[in-house]
Image (cartoon, rainbow, N blue to C red):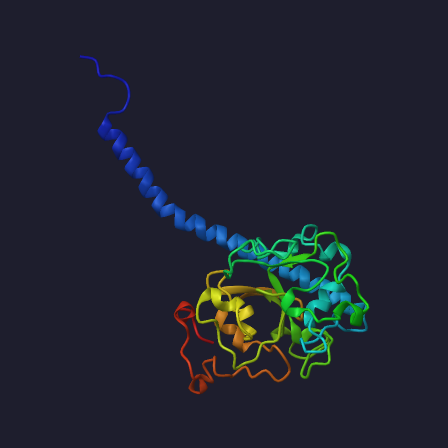
Length: 285
């Protein structure tokens, strides 16, 4: 009796089981490789931002863009540094290095309407001619003499933020430019939920990963889990790398930032709160 061509049901089930097993083994490796690629692209974007900042300082008497911490008389704060970019660099549509590959969707649309979820993967913006409501002064445009803060058609949006202490403002302990000591330890641009921030060593991380959008604590704008325990960072000296989340408290954000503060290994005895569960699993620094 001649055997029929083709597989039996049992043989097909065995083949399917083998394929499923191979997929189960390979998928984690593929996901890890994909995330590594995204992290590399993120770090490369930040390195370009470091180069842009360096070139600006070279043509601006060794100083970065101007800006200041928001006050009652200057509610925009760091809104001024993007306004000083060239038009092509401002535009989030033309300048693709605004976005980390893991964070490409702005929280708002160009009309200021919330269109995305407030997660640590969301990008800030879109901001157009004027700052959002929580940063507008009643006579802001008249006082500033600027009718348009951003000179491009689409406004600004992104997933990176500058270290506000690098801006050439009058804030105490600011770096203001790249020609400083310890440039290898000073963060310039970091994965962030806002385009600027002024971290202090006593500030802790968000209690929950997506709470970082809320409140005055500014280090949590950067302490976001976009790369499995890391954030992309470019430093004042121009080198870029992924930085472990808890290492953020060991970076020299401003001239008097205590790198042995309560959220570090060295200063742990001064800490009044434990690490939140979401970040607790990562190594201490």
